[in-house]
Image 1: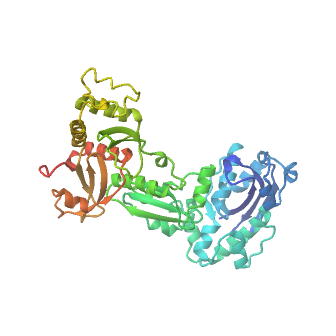
Image 2: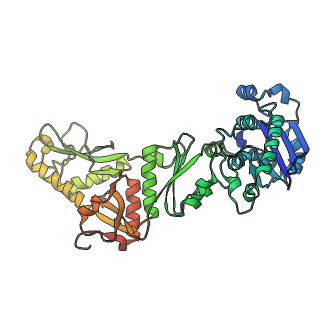
Image 3: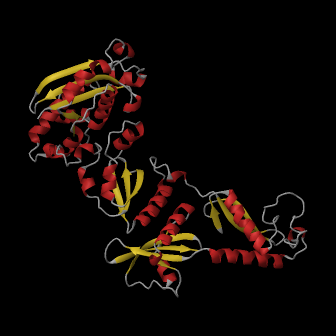
Length: 460
């Protein structure tokens, strides 16, 4: 088996927006280097000062160097039938494969990451960066951060790994069925092996244990592995994969519970790589309060957390539409409900739909009676029910509770729990914040699965 040990220097950290400034390829036959190729490359873009400071490669040095397209045939010839080896292989491979594709060469190679293999074959080192690992192993590393020097050190490291691979871990990782070569460099295979195939929520964490992404899955292991397939060259994906060091998970009884937990956890931790659910916020709500004259007021206002909202809406129009319906049905005052906001008297006084509370012609007690009736009617139309479904194992079942049109919470109960006792049932559940996104998921599921819905004591 032949290995192509590759190291590159670049203008930046992701392939789609940056170029290669230098490449070194060492063909290794399993014991020694038998062929080599090294060249500076004109990236056709400016080399940032901090990159020049790191590598020593300046714009002047690459000015008359070949373009990648000029050397692409030679690079492809050296790589296409060999195992692509690099220290943090996905970085180098993404650049080289992208540049070759630009020159109409389709590189399909097995990959071997010397970071991952070092962690397995020679464990126990405090750092697996090329510089510190070579220092610990007494591997000579000359011209650090230059392609030739780093590739030569990586080739020596590969020889050491092959000599010490008594369990055949390298050949196992290169097997077609192995996922080893696609995993992020800092994520252990054991972390993947520990994942269950249940529905649930998974958490990607960085080297400090900070959550950087939260996702839900019907099958946690399958979904997590799907994140590592493909060869995306975008900056976001490259940074994302590089920062994954740990995976935690929470098993859920159903996909619906996983969806709810995912939404709640994203709102709680705000991971930097979650975007869609982070943008969801409740916008408006229906509130009630008593003014200085003793009149109960209804009004639509921007939703505020930890406030006692009667109902929530995604748009002002939806809120005002509901409020207008309550005004008409219960003969409430548009001015006291903030629908009519000018200084004139309520226009409904003349039609008899308003009894004159805005002019002080109706006693607060009389007006408040109708407001209370309107609120009571609203609450009576809002659903309260439990959803009983599969649990995390055969000894339990899951339960979700909606109360007066708001998602209350969810949890797990035994098959011996009296589901007809709603208050006792609620005490077994963990409360979760409610919003229209979560509520609509629960309502849609209940509509599609009426047999799992318990509405009242009588029905239970």
